[in-house]
Amino acid sequence: MNETQQLTIDTLGTWQRTHDCGGLRASDIGQEVVLMGWVNSRRDLGNLIFIDLRDKDGLTQIVFDPQENTISHERAHVLRNEWVMAIKGKVVARIPGQENKKLPTGMVEVKVLELKILNKSETPPFQVDGQVDASETLRAKYRYLELRRPKIYQNFHTRHLAATYVREFLNQNDFVEVETPFLTKSTPEGARDYLVPSRVNKGLFYALPQSPQLFKQILMIAGFERYYQIVRCFRDEDLRADRQPEFTQIDIEMSFADEETVANIAEGMMAHVFKQVLHQEVALPILRMPYREAMDRYGSDKPDLRFGLELVDLTDLVRNSDFQVFQKIAQAGGVIKAINVQKGAEKFSRKALDELTQQVQAWGAKGLAWVKITAEGWQSSLTKFFSAEVKEAVNQRLQAKPDDLILILSDQAKMVNKILGQVRLDVARKIDLIKKDAYAFLWVTEFPLLEYNEEEKRLEAVHHPFTAPKEEDLHLLDSRPQEVRARAYDLVLNGSEIGGGSIRIHNPVLQEKMFRIMGISQEDAKLKFGFFLEALTYGAPPHGGIAFGFDRLVMIMTGTDSIRDVIAFPKTTSATCLLTDAPSQVDPRQLAELGIQLKSI
Image (cartoon, rainbow, N blue to C red; front, side, top):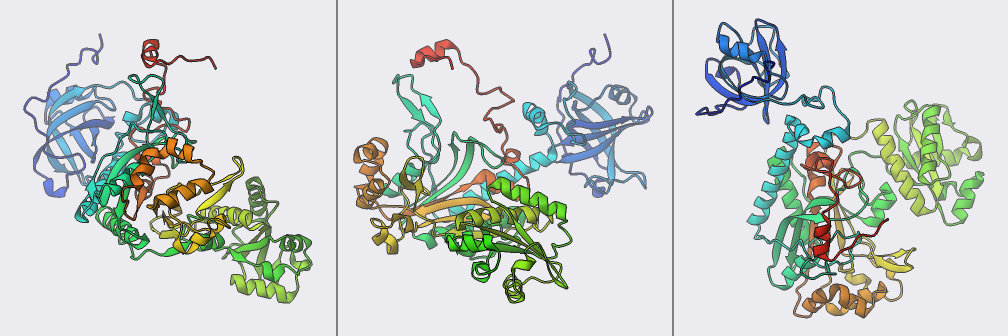
């Protein structure tokens, strides 16, 4: 039997921790302390054994010296990474020249007087200190080990603080927190529902809520006036870096509110949270931009305003040039747009431009034209097709100067805006234009109310069917419904939609009309939304609200690239949990109780 197998696991007894592992400073020199945590790393020099002891708050270097305590020194030889331990010791200054200025505790170390080994650990499948990282799959399987990393813990501490100050602000502004059901009725809201079979009512199903949309509106009808909830929501949809099947939402609804009322509360809440958590000031009021302007200038309904590269329309300048591609597109009602990459001529070689062109074609464009501006004029295959006057006019409109790079795309407006907006982001990342420590907020307003679904051959709501149309556009509902603007708004931060909402329809007659326009029959509407439509007939007040993607907000606040970094136990992109192996098969007896029989696929 080896030394580790004979190991005695100690108990804490009467020991009480006096400091966290990230808390000791030079001012603590001379104190006797009790520290507890995990072995982050060890260096056994024979006479001296050095351990970096880790807890959620950081690292402290501890030293086992036989001159201090021979028993503790002898026992320390068996310590390995991720073993759990507690020590009593004395804080001393590190030897001059051996300080670690990268650590807050780097000026001191603790000479161990007494050791307690609280538990041992198997050899971890990856280094918890992150110096040699593992695959995402392995880290997800052993998520509890990755969560030990202080940096990961800090993400969750930030999340905790953000939730705390959201509640603080809303509580101070006369909101009441109300929980709504998780087991509810399946209603079409844009994504597939997660269904839950009922054992008591065999053959019937609950649905997990995609959002508390109908319940929060019913709370307004009930007279609660100001409601909020930090709530879990569920959507069975394709996943990506900023999307999970279960996510958290800050849900807010207000009676007797218009767009400005909602915006003032949302802005005040953001300013409060950012000041308290990140010590960042949010300039108020936040800029408003109509949807069509955002698409025209940035090619996106969630533009990142941390950098420029605005889309500029050149159609009127180049439509009569000798370049037939531009001529034909302009004659067909299309557009020719460009972005000016300042000082981009040297940053993009011919090879880099060819690669960018291939990327643009993969996104669906026919090609990408480019012009490098030199002191002598244009350097481009387009030069011969344009007169000196047109070139000068293009330069002036784009404010292009020598060493700049002009990227040009031509097609129908929707395609050009979408793809040139993607080019804008791609270029900004490649030449490092995006300010990492900046927070650029923007309200995008006046979204279209309806859009045509080619697959179903009908109009459908851009947001949801309970969004109110702008009053000045009501006369267009029957004749030109796709021109109607919604009383909807999104709050955008650094190119991500962090919140979205609308003023709701509170008039049952208008709600029925909306259903008819979207091809939802009276019978179908009653089947899917009957309880809500009936509630509208009992004196519904004007009301509106907004919902924030809390995980996405915290992701941006912590500077991570994925919401999986701010969700304790996230799912993979195939909606599986590698830690628990969910989803999994269940006992046939459970299915029998539910009246369910599985078919082979």
